[in-house]
Image 1 (cartoon, rainbow over the protein chains, first blue to last red):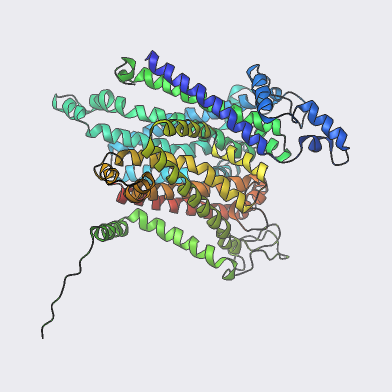
Image 2: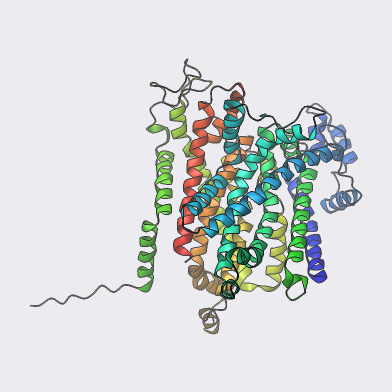
Length: 317
Length: 289
């Protein structure tokens, strides 16, 4: 298991380096003369050149990349061009807010979709199965802002059950905060449910067909034990892997949901930075999201190897 | 004089194709999806020519409730929402399929090369793809669109570029399953070159997964275009695009009124993506038996 995880860690490190190159390259695509943007249209060319020199953007690209990475390694994400404060001061709290929302969405969607997928698989081809499969597929396909608006209309405006803004008033207690985050997380749940449920369903159906399941039945175990001990344990492994890959979507989906609910998370930060052409903020925000994704994948790999005896005992890589 | 009837000889490929079509016609999911998508394709093509009113025409009757004169009501500028919903199919139905086509073409070429050549090329490209996939589509697209400036062309290129590695992964997996079948070494022994083997020998045999992947991607492309347009980085005004209508009007919801300016375009997007996904589901069942 140690070797498996070490290999994963190594791959994640390589991916991280490549990711930084991609983000840096993307930032180089961003248009315009940074000094000109900052100093405004009436600044003299000398003044613009001085600003560019001060920011270091007049050096060769490789040197700029080296400097950028060096600063990143020391935890310095740079200065926001728009707000003139360190990017980390702004990104930190935003990331915290986003993680709160994402955590709530995950807490809701994982048990719900696994339950849905297993229920569908056990009633394969019948009405429960069709409802969960087609309903989940449709919910997954519909853009999150459309689902969110329907949810706002139903829960917020018609029945007045839930607040329609995601941000709780300052100093609000834990439960008030959660209550405010419920509607946005429902929208995220709607998008993720169908996908995870579908994988769980496929896993259970495959396990039900497997020889070991037949053996378990034939040696006289009752259905409940067979499902718990043999079917679910095998079926849920691929589901865990899929849940991890969905973190990527989840954070992407946050951009739209956070804008819609006016929630100060990292998605909204990136959106505002993109609108204001605050390139340092955009660059660091995108990189932070990539890193969060890599950490989530690594965590899922660890969990996967802990749960999978074939890896735990080093029989398979 | 006697006539001899020669039975029409059909190649195996023709028979297989007819079997597939018959399977699709029998699939309820596929037919339901095709009807819905067909409806929107029709409106995307005829656009504002057949709508009851000009979707861009502003009138004095602003924010009228749905009723006799305006089935879906009017918006803040007095434009007929029903006509705007019908004409709103055009932009997204141009951008999303072209982006998908670009991504599928690029991804197929990349996936064939990776799956067939394996080794170093595969390892390096695989790592790069993993790195790209660590970034959510919307985030990558927003950054690229800020760099290039929003336009339908940018939208197509950016979404196509982001789809390329995703499609490549699927195609690579399909190619790996094919490359050790007898016909591939046979072609190699015949002295065929690698590009010939990849594109003429292997490609036709992995078309099934590619068609399914293309349909799934089309659904995601519509999803992505809708999200980006909602954020203001996608299709630009004055297009009557659905997501644009939602983005312009959703702030009206807060008061609890004027729901029709948002709900109807929302339902339109929803039916289109669900339709595309039903087609994808039907294709999966028939092509990947």
